[in-house]
Length: 138
Image (cartoon, rainbow, N blue to C red; front, side, top):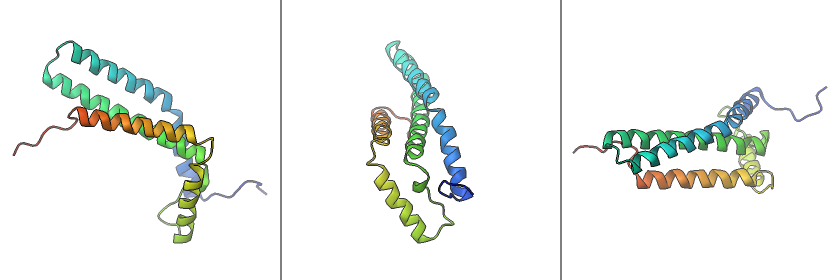
């Protein structure tokens, strides 16, 4: 007889996927740092526009990747109660939403919430400063 809280198979799969993604956080953060360094070096070296555009897009992809890993780490720190699937009934989904908001207030989760906010702000500042998508020709 298991002593822990029972978790559905779908939720357990989501949680395990988040654990794997959270384990990649440090590597993805380093890759984003390297992408930023390459972009800044290219900007300082008076590089051509197509190369700068590619480096800008690469940095944006790296920031999105590290943000996904940080969000997964935050969910892992919150625990399995915050996961919901489309197959669950409305009451269970609502309970997961409430558990999510409660978990955000815990001290163990707060550093990850702050890191997600920091990364999201940095990515949006980058997107506002540089074109990451080609402009549409009208």
